Image (cartoon, rainbow, N blue to C red; front, side, top):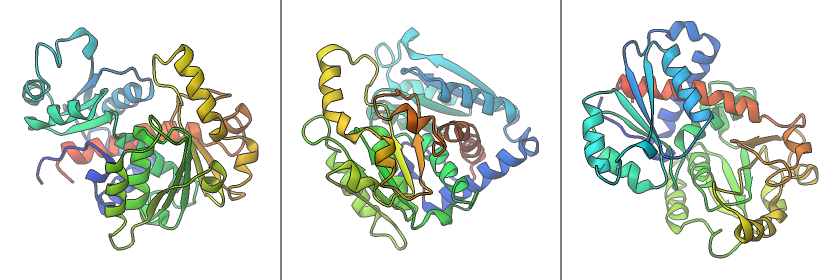
Length: 319
């Protein structure tokens, strides 16, 4: 099959996502069956932004598949300054079998992919977080009693409350629409908080497909969460936000904090999700994230399994 880059979750079709989730489920159950799946293959992991889950899950995953992961911190390199992202992608293609990049902007991902002859996977930028989406879909299936069967997500409702102008929100909207879910998001209004028009337009286009779901922006946290199967929150603060800016964001976002009371608006069986890291007392209360409805650590673990499945399919040209 042809070379594929994954810059956002909608680069994958519903059928492809289902195939990845099925493989991830099998890898989780019987990891020893895949110890040679990427034997002698090398993954180059670029990090401009720090990460615990991304680095550890990718390195551990490549090791368990018989391959090798190299973490390269771009703060120590001329990447994007003395050397273009396009040139970097071309060079890495001669030395490794795939690249993941956790960077600040979508333009950086596009540059890496432009001249690359190996798969480039967005490990997070300002527009998408596709590896996180696969882990999220996997954990939702597991807690719906349908592990591995992506089609069983159709009809489920996901609520996201908080900062809806961010990469996770955008890809959740795309992912849910592709998989036949209803995604309701709610957050503060106005500059700095409203989702980008291009994301809303893309979701509307995705919703036109047969069997697709829908993504919508609603006015209040309560409206988003009412009757939901899953309630999702994410960090309110990017690295480095301090002082007056931090206080202003807290004041704007506090009506969207996930509390036990807000969870009470969801279905009785609803689960709470957060892609971590989490700040108790900000995007959710300790009572929620540490309570019996929280599945955040199952969610974090699935970064390992979902990414292994994606990498095997990409590197072996099975997508």
